[in-house]
Figure 1 (tube, one colour):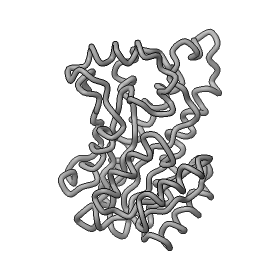
Figure 2 (cartoon, rainbow, N blue to C red):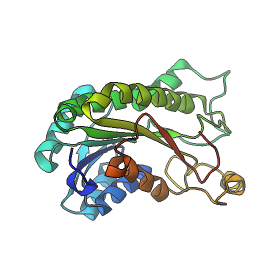
Figure 3 (tube, rainbow, N blue to C red):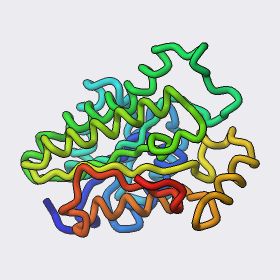
Figure 4 (cartoon, one colour):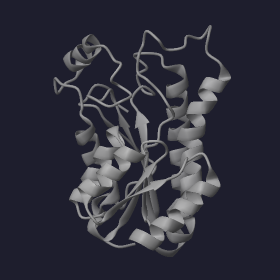
Length: 253
């Protein structure tokens, strides 16, 4: 595997907006070629690709469709070069609104399954599509988790269960892909200020989180995106199967 971020093609799922867009900006800033995956946010993804310049391009695929993901990787390889870094950020439709969340007496398995299909199924499809390149030159996989797994201050059952499953999958994938020279790690953020998913969160909740956080503020998408650079860089080459919580010190792993 090449040595610097600038030498790599990075595939970011769910990159059209929110945290995904900030992840793309962080990698582009370091000189990487950035493939922006989107499902429905075509306008946003295309605008971001134009913003980032000729080393970035937008690619449509639903991550739960294995055939579409494989086709997308082929398109990325032709246009930007074979991806050796995967950042799995795609999220099923979700709103962090504690008042509107499903409670246990209304929660259906389909709610959990829908979140898990994108979180874990999407990761599986992307990893499988990238395995030929991983076998040839190693790589990096970075999954996006949540500190709600460690501290479910608001019981978003479906979302948190999916992220917990993704953490387990991250660790088992690290064990299997390690011999190929592939590291697999998770970054677990807290409530971020502000993404589309957290836009429905009342301001009082942001204030409460800030007061309880050692740094005294809510983490931004830009700050979490910067942490992803470590796992993709040479400095992270001996770290795998780990979950790095990036939330200003609110919870510990």
